[in-house]
Image 1 (cartoon, rainbow, N blue to C red):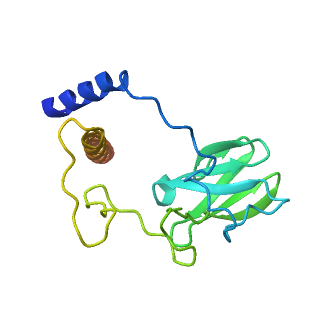
Image 2: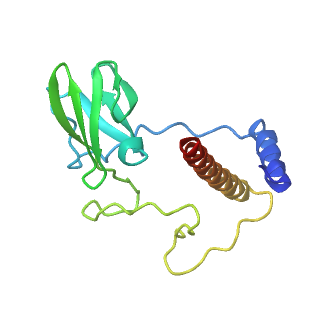
Image 3: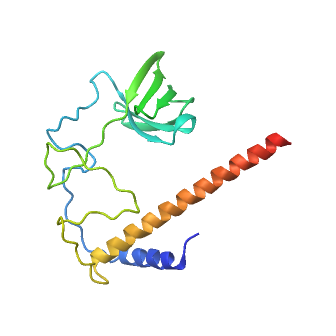
Length: 192
């Protein structure tokens, strides 16, 4: 359920979206790709399938298999087949999936993530992601920055991030409650 304060922020964000200033031209460097010249290699030339994502754990896991030739990804539950790709198993500890394609069994490893920061040193490991409830580091180490002035773009961006974080948390709580209700219903069904 959305709180009235969240609804007000959402309405404000929608109203301001129409008045957004012109954006700067897009850069050619993607923050989602490894930095140019990094050690992150593309998949082998003869391998067109890569493991690019996972959602869930164990038998309930969904794995994302990306076909580099078709330029299309498929979210496939473990134990099922989609577009001729059957996901046999997913090992969470090793971030590996065992699939069968065209009668061949293949072991795919989840691609390593890397974060390209303008101020980071290329030889240092990428920083880990913070959870939504932890504070993000400030641009200057050691001295905290004052909060942005009310009504500024920075303040609106901060509120928008907080709203998204709240909505994600609410969604996770609702999903957990739904899964618990499903388990309870199945347990009651087995008893009768």
